[in-house]
Image: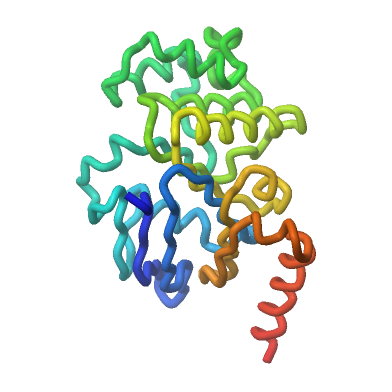
Length: 241
């Protein structure tokens, strides 16, 4: 299977506001796809449609070559973290993951592996309400990994992390791709986060996916930063006309 995610003219509209506008997205199996755009570009809404959290106004979604609908069993093969992770605040980190293991029919023994992967095993008995934003983010990523999903959909996964934590998560995602063949779609408004781990970057602005470009293409031409800044300038000039 060449593509794990395919969308056709996917759109979401609230009243007169078009949040996602006819997006045609293709994510190759076994790759990391970075969705880059400013806050409010429509990245989160797009991911919500891909994970059945909201229904499209129009368009189609295929995961693993099969049309997605709200009751599709396809989501059993997907790990997700959309917006700020939500937990039961009075339960411990381990208790929250136990609930998710049972929901995903995953072995409870897997929890230790995921907590260790994210560097929070020593905090497993702490109540979630006492954890920092960065620790909650790590716990959300651990939860997304439960069940060893074939596809990860991660919305701003480094939010709240310090520089060493950002590096750890980047290495973790690259390792999942290389060692397990996991396909990853992640979003960010931070250029360097995506540049260092993605194979392909999709440039999104005001609900439109304007361009997709392989990161390798920048190695022998202009820098990604120069390209991105000129691209943003072009969008703003076009809207001003």
